[in-house]
Image (cartoon, rainbow, N blue to C red; front, side, top):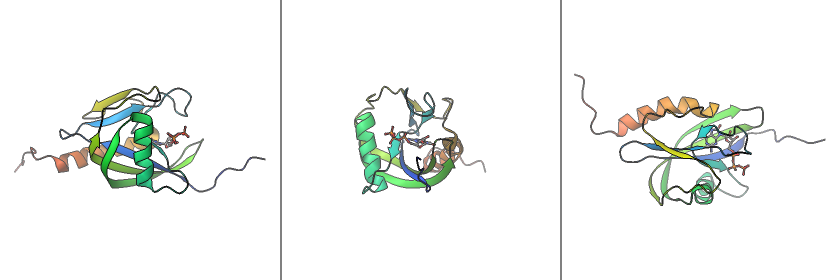
Length: 144
Ligand SMILES: Nc1nc2c([nH]c(=O)n2[C@@H]2O[C@H](COP(=O)(O)OP(=O)(O)OP(=O)(O)O)[C@@H](O)[C@H]2O)c(=O)[nH]1
């Protein structure tokens, strides 16, 4: 009989944010659960790795990007039919390289995120991301 891992699976997820606030999304390639859904790039943390190490490894493996620095932002748990995941979202403003489709995935830089469908656990993040983006913005006008 096969046994399922009972606790959540840790996943490192990275949000690359350009100076203008645009963020990078990737479309899950064929053969993965939720194929065709959009997500922030990342993947499962392997045994013996920190979340940050996993983040850097996944970005290099999947996109050929070197993440130079990233800050932990928020953590979300979600139970899918295929897995119970704990997503550790990091925001990075410093990286090297252009996204390469090493797994056949499509990419899109988005201001207000309009690509669909998004992975269900990622949907609430989009609203929080707008707040984060505006808090970084220096061009915001004071309504008063
Ligand atoms: N990368 C990423 N994963 C997410 C997001 N939101 C979300 O629910 N997930 C979930 O987190 C898990 C990530 O696992 P994965 O299958 O992409 O990881 P991996 O690259 O290590 O895949 P592999 O098992 O094929 O090697 C999936 O269950 C996925 O549904 C997101 O925004 N980005």
